[in-house]
Image 1 (spheres, one colour):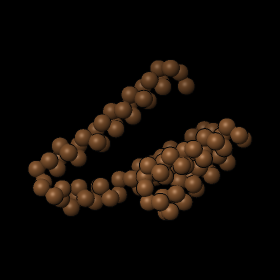
Image 2 (cartoon, one colour):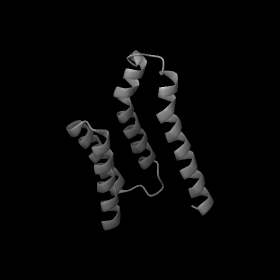
Image 3 (tube, helix red, strand yellow):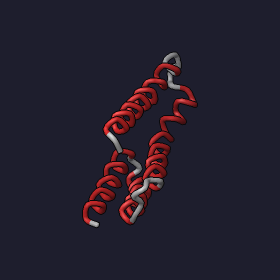
Amino acid sequence: MSAGEIILAITAASIALILTRSLGFIFFASAKSGGKLFTAFQENMPIMIIVILIFVTLQSANFGVAQIVGSLAAIAAHLIFKNALVTIALSTAVCLTLAAVI
């Protein structure tokens, strides 16, 4: 992967992050309690992000044991802790540690 591709990927991810964080406030700013749709997004967004991360990990060219165990760690951590930040941090740490060791 060239430096230009890395910069493009970081830029695209940054724009996607800004849009996903701000569009909810823009579209639902007039709703007093957030509305049913906003509440549904709020409740389901962490698991949707985790599913996307798992699929991106599984489609990578360097697929191996570390990615499988990291994905299983993500599923287990989410079922145990039900906290997106803990799930993402734990599964990332497991995957990167195994990738460095193996």
